[in-house]
Length: 288
Image (cartoon, rainbow, N blue to C red; front, top):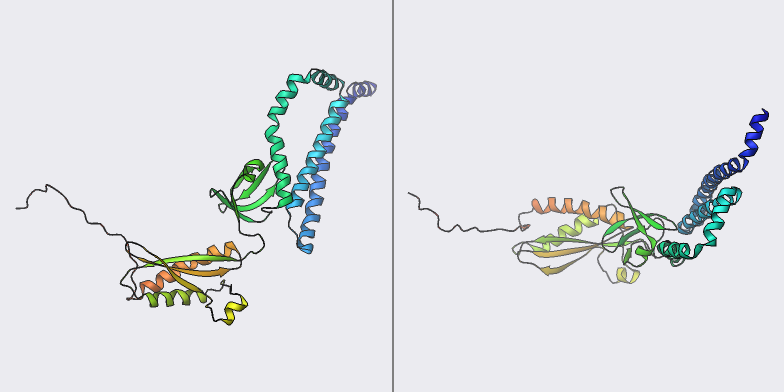
């Protein structure tokens, strides 16, 4: 027992450092668990977004682990001496560290700007530079996590996403006007096609009335259809339909593609054009 106590005293600094690391892990896990429960309840009751909460949780984790690292270095004499030696001759080291951490500090500052100015929030559906589309899952000190519709995570550094063009479908108003385009041949009954599109759109359960009160008084239709362009073999009709959010709008668009195609197929006055090609073969052998 005496030998064990002496051994423990000899390595008490290392035991203390290990205890600090374990305590930091437990403390970080506990605080994040409590904050998650508190912030989720607050978000539901106060109807506020979770963006600042997510960023705050990551900042708390950074403070905990930075403090634990400093305590460990200070408590172990070997590390303490090594750190003093390094910082005593820190000219070149500081330059290297500064250069290496430049991007990290840029990400942190960009993350703070994202939280302050809120071009997007946790839970928003965004398009980033016409490359990535998904729902914002988390905003950390270093990067933004986006979940796409294949349930894959897209990790974008804060400094990069801050400099890109972002389309946010959830700022101010979640409603979206979906453009549904359908091509019919020049010989088709255009009025009949527009009537079919209107009927199918109006009976869809997810459509909402996007008209203003003035437009309703003026008798504007709930579903507007316009002839938007003429192509080589088709006339393009566009229906403007409103949905409560972008996801409902996309799903409604897919449903209408199916139902309108079925209606067009059953109506002899409407043709859906498709490209035709005529192929000529030269120097063919004569048939006998």
